Image (cartoon, rainbow, N blue to C red; front, side, top):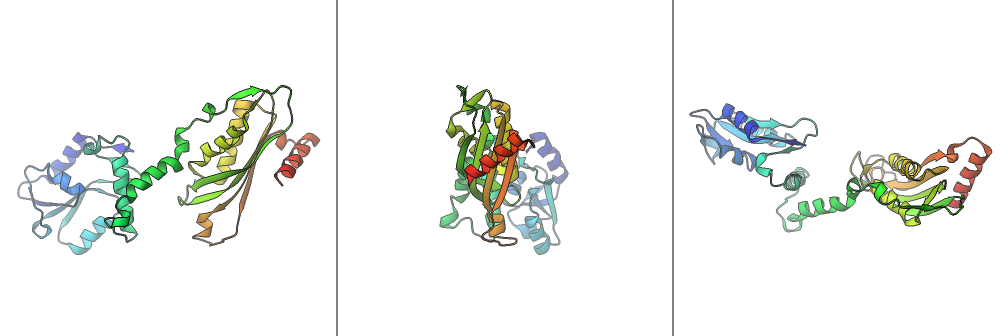
Length: 283
């Protein structure tokens, strides 16, 4: 995220603010900027303007529109975006997390797909999406170490398995959901944890932009770090809407991934027995 300072804005405006120049501000970012111009005249009427001023170039759709319909005008954007850079202007400083800007960007996305963001059913949609993201991506604000309260094993050294844990996540490639179930197991070493904590651990990593393979690796790596077990495993079966709704359009495909650490990867007879027991219990 890039926070623009007032000095950066004023330095850019000095290049635009020329005597005798008539400037039209693109609603609404450009209109804010024209309010700071001193030497250049501003106008609400585009036909009388020499320059069309906007705050930034995002998708480029606005610039393309004005270039096409007003080829005799000079289009100036003070801050062209770089790659996926997120820009916050100083007049948005009361929203340090950029929440207001996120909602404005969702409005632009609705316009991009051909919708009217002002119609009744969509008027509160940007706000609802931001609130939904708070739930869908809650994992970014959670520390696995805070949920993994450990207890002594009391001599127990057999496999612990939590099977069929519901899993919902968002693919980082297309931001479309994938969903299914996870099976998480470990063989205790020095400690055990409450069985519900395995489900919580899956949720912490699933509630982020993800790929399925990474979730399993993060789960078993965390178990190995905090419990120091003899081994840990996570097998995930999931369906991906990026395959079902678009692309190859395969409606019945299921992706299966396995992440194994410790004894579950051991090539010995003990390792083979652990893997066979795990797969047998998963069914």
